[in-house]
Length: 255
Image (cartoon, rainbow, N blue to C red):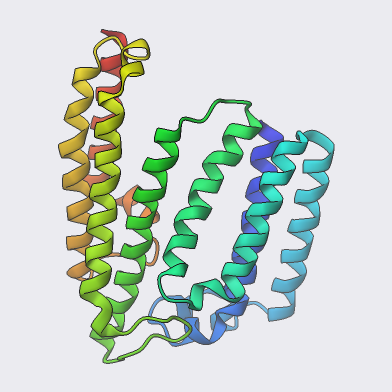
């Protein structure tokens, strides 16, 4: 599992570097992204390509030596889709956010394959919807920055400022759909075999509804960073919501 984690991290880092290099023009026009090492000129572009290749080669070597074939296949699929996203898919309307949701879900699948853990369809459904919501929040944040900067159309993306209400709707509806999937999971017949008292899990639903709504609201007000997941990790309210959800899961399982 450790080797799989390292290999996946190296692969993701390789693609992130490639994405930054492909996105140089858009990053240089962005108020925050222009400060990134390659966009600002702090690091030579060729160094970035060299490092991306080196990280990928190292990831492949570790995967072939220490991980099962199923994980290698999952990792290869992840890289191909991420590579396609960096070059083409992120410039395609709606397909970009669907791809982002798929890629985040692919990480969960790869982790399950690496640890030979059974992956619930409920988890896959919840993951797709919640990450689709966060992907829409990401695009909403970019457009909000554009609106404040007086730009009507984003560089390297298919969205315009007029699309903001639609993206907000996608973010909210996908997030609420994730909560619905979780509610259906709590109501499923097999839940009692996994938790001592699954009724407590219902308390997570209003917490998630609040968190999703707040994320969209913070984005609307211009407080969201370029990555909603990074924002959530550093946001005190998000941290409290996550801790409360974990506590509820623990209580439900111990009773």
